Image (tube, rainbow, N blue to C red; front, side, top):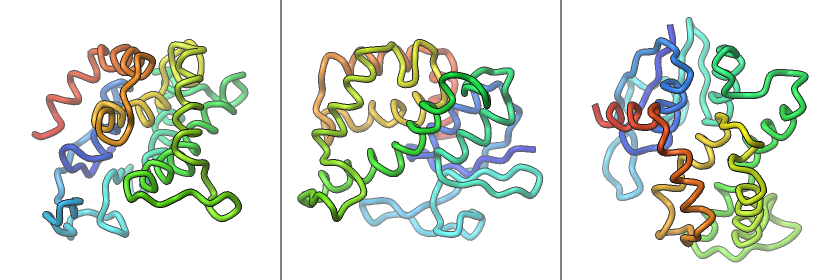
Amino acid sequence: MLTLYHAPRSRSSRIVWLLEELGAPYTLKYVNIRRGDGSGAVDPANPHPHGKVPTLTDDGALIFESPAIALYLTDRFPDAKMGPPVGDHDRGAYLTWLAWYTGVFEPALTAKFLKVQHVYGTFGWAPFDDVLAYLSAAITKNPYIVSDRFSAADIIIGGSLPFLMGRVVPESDELKAYVTRITERPAYARARAKDSG
């Protein structure tokens, strides 16, 4: 049985959305986390080694980090077609985008938020403006991140945009149209309803 350890309005909200898209049976366990404003605390009921979310358990297996959970779930439930299977032409792009989110997008976003100047040859990611230009080009070329089909990569990357646009991520017509495309899905509405219990 899948159990998602979840804190409302956090990175785990995207995994609730993914589970709804997959139609997978799961249990949602609400846990407390430390928040950026200093509120919250590490919850002993959360098995994540750093007290964060999302955390997924599946019959004793522990999976954490959003891209790892997305890959695990889309491979476990291939009939939902939320991730290209091994051998599919788009598989490499799918894996790349999932890794790009954690290895490039989030660090560049954090550096921008903290006003840390990017240093080539030191950081393993690109400057935020380059990162945003790359994402914008991808969603201009295709309706979705990987290709013309919606996937878990859209949930992991695009699922953060409604909360970031106008704050850290500048609004653009391309990003707004993309967010509208992906958030009009029924599973997104179901996930939002479950997000805070």
